[in-house]
Image 1 (cartoon, rainbow, N blue to C red):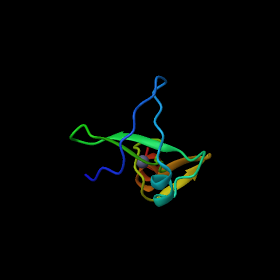
Image 2 (cartoon, rainbow, N blue to C red):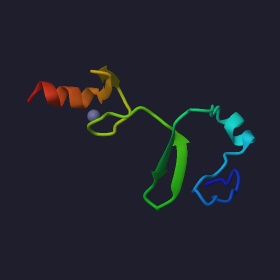
Image 3 (cartoon, protein in one colour):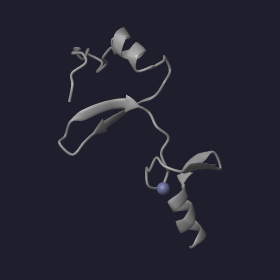
Image 4 (cartoon, rainbow, N blue to C red):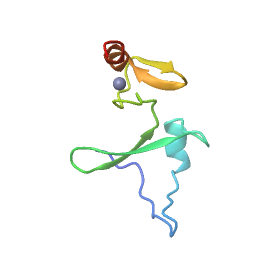
Length: 80
Ligand SMILES: [Zn+2]
């Protein structure tokens, strides 16, 4: 994994995303960032993606009562 920048965490737990990173990855003020961890316990920041409220999947999402639900969960619910 490539290191883009190194920043200190302040006393409130905050870090600043460098302007160059925000610009290169089109991260705008107010935008949500997901804090994730992969199989090797590496913490990753990524632009927040809508996820299915049931399975956290990110493909074939439809809004149901203003909540994202994926196609396979919709099928499961239909078959209950
Ligand atoms: Zn789902």
